[in-house]
Length: 217
Image 1 (cartoon, rainbow, N blue to C red):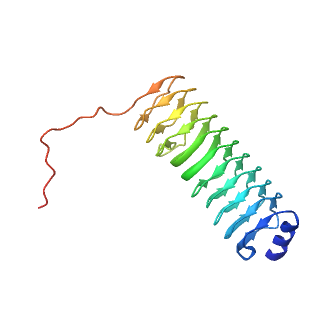
Image 2: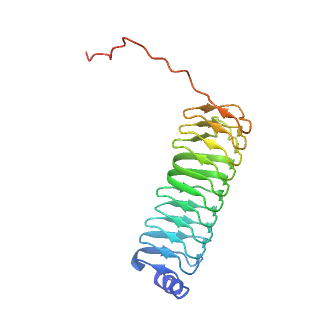
């Protein structure tokens, strides 16, 4: 079936195309009623998209299962599952083997890989989470990195429900952050953080009086 026939069939099923001439969808794709497909979108493979979603401009989706009421903005998703009410992007990269829960926020310049993300969790911006089991209602501060690779092997990180990950935290796997625990901004976490604890892992600030900026030669 050619591209135009595929789009015509989807339109009869209630899918809304903003620009039919710039939508590229495989015959194997299923899209629910009321979903809006914006221009320059490519949807491939065995992808299933639910009802009342928005597949935003320049998104690329391959072999994903996406529930109802999901909003995807300028993002790439591959071989993953996205729960209802979740927002993805702009400029988000969902790599294979991810299971994302309901009402999750995957914001700008967020990358996840082989990760389980619980309901209501927020990864708002500039964050990498790979090989991790992330619970519900967790907040990731800007610049968080799950350090999953030691140069030879990949290791998993576990973050339990209600945890708060401060900005610029490095979680060096394998490591576990307990329920409702906090990590202080700028920390490099190499040991497990018990539930309800605050982990601070950064050098003490030293101010040098009388210091002068090096002069150009």
